[in-house]
Length: 313
Image (cartoon, rainbow, N blue to C red; front, side, top):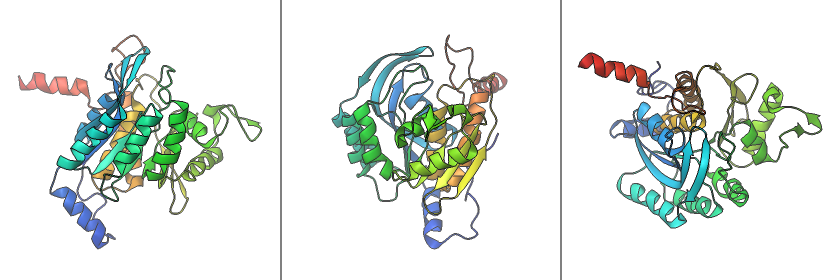
C-alpha cells in the first residue's frame, strides 16, 4: 500500500526558493484540509468520505457542511440545505483559528450556498489550493445540484479551482456537450475515445480552472486524463477496474486525497496520480456487505485495522 506522506515529495532537486520554503512550512505543522460538502447519513460519500480520506493521508480534516442528506446505500430520500450564512460561518471559523492548507469542494446544492462558498474562498490566503469535485447527481440518480447552482458553480467556483475533478457525465454537462452525442457523432459515454476525452478535458480548462482531472470511471478503459492550463498537454493516468469492489464515495475520496496531497506539497499531477491509485484501492476493498444497495469504498482498510486490534489484545 503506497504511503500518502513523504517528505519532501519528489526530492529537493530543481526546486526554487519559494517552493522549498512552502515545503519547510508544511513540515513544521500538521497539514490542514477543509472539506466543503454535504453530509451522507449512510457514511459512504460526502463529508464522511472526505474525512476518512484525509485521515488516510495523514492530514487534519476540517469540515463546512453545505447540506444534510437522508441517504443510505439505496439512495437519497431527503435533502436539507444549510443556510448560506452558516456555511460561510463554518469556513470563517476554521480559517481564523486553525488555518487551511488546501480546500476540497464537493456538493453545493443551491445557488445561494454556492455564492456563499465563493465568498468564503476569498477569506483564504492567496494561493491556497482548491480542489473542486462538481457533484451533480448521486449514484442513485438523485439530483444534488440545482440548475441555477450549476451556473453559479461555473461562474464563481471553477475559475478559483486549482484542480477540478469531474467524471465524464459531469464534464459533458459543464461544457454543454450533449450526453448522447457530440457534434453529430453518437458516442455512448463509456466509449469516449482518447482524443474525445482529451478534447473534453481541454474544454473544461476554458471554464477557468488551473488543471483538470477527467476521471475515467465512466469510460470503457478506466483511465483518468490530466490537463494543465500552463501547457495544455494531456497526461493519461491509468488504473484498474475493480468489479468485485464497491464504488459509492469514490469521487469524494479521489478529490479529497488529491487535496491532501496538495496540502502536503505535491504538484497537481503528482497528487492526481496518488489520488487515482488510492481511490482505486478503496474501491477494490469496497464494503459489499454494508447495506442492500451500492456499497461504500473503504479507504482505511477496515479489515486490516480490525485484525491489528485483535493481535494487540
